[in-house]
Amino acid sequence: MGHSSRVTRQVAALAGALALSSALSLAVLLGAEGSIFGASEFGLHGLRQHYRRPAEIPYPKDDPYSRAKYELGRTLFFDPILSGAKLRSCSTCHNPGLSWADGQPRAIGENQQPLASGLRTPTLLNVAWTPKLGWDGHFRDLEGVAISPITAPDNMNLPESTLIERLAAIPGYVNAFNAAFGKGDIDRHKIEQALATFERSIVSDEAPFDRWIRGDEAAIDASAKRGFALFNGKGNCAACHSGWAFTDGSFHDIGVAHDNDIGRGRLFPTSVKLQYAFKTPTLRDVARRRPYMHDGSLATLGDVIDLYNRGGIERPSRDDEIHQLNLPQGDKADLIAFLQALSAKAKPFVLPDLPR
Image (cartoon, rainbow, N blue to C red; front, side, top):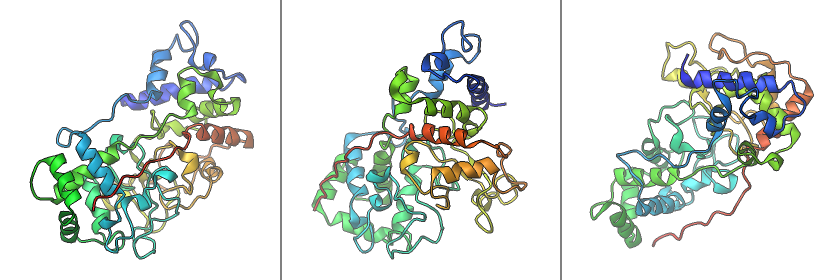
């Protein structure tokens, strides 16, 4: 068993034991030396580390951070010049006011019709830590994602050559590219790196859960604390929604997709377990990112919990962690209270001035 799986199961066992107590105070949950956690290999330090927010954003060696590249990528992200009709930008689908998604059940393209993929727009929260991108993981990295939606005819509908011509005709963009990359022509590689640098900066803000896990007992209520224990214990949610971002970054069939909507199975047609498998989304800001599932088929968090409670569609590809839970209504309410505690307070986002 891998280290991450072992850690998840240790947390589950410990939190499940704590669920027996009706007083899930942080002092009890986090414990002290000599308490239930003090006797565990995982222990107090391990529990805190498992959910601790990272101190720094990871940037790849071949696309390191620079302020000039970040500012260029931020400007490009919000500029509708990147779409054929000059009406849509990256932020049209990845709206900071909607936790970097769009609130739609299916992604919408320039023609105001759902994209051919039939998929919901994923949030960009914490994508710097996501190893494979896209609901089926077919993008290798953020740089690989950048141009695809811009040039797709049913999405932003702008050919690469036209994109470069438009940017090169604007003195402000020429200066911005030169500041970020040195003097030279604007090209696809530079556009990809600038957009990816900005997108890696999109990190979920501190939520009530983060303050609680650090020791602020009043940050979340008793229902959310019980929900946390259920999340790691009987609910088995942490089997896939693990770590500080509440995702394992992997792909699972949870029993919701059907017919030809086979997800990662298209990339690995001989793998039984990858049929109908889609990426585990982050649960950060989840209460503000309805509807849910890769296809937007579930309207509320209650609907999501009901799906897991009944175990979804039973079939050979269904993940081994998915099964009927038989949770009573009180447990469902506690899980929702915990999930709501993962949402940070909304705050204004200052849009960049567009160069002309």
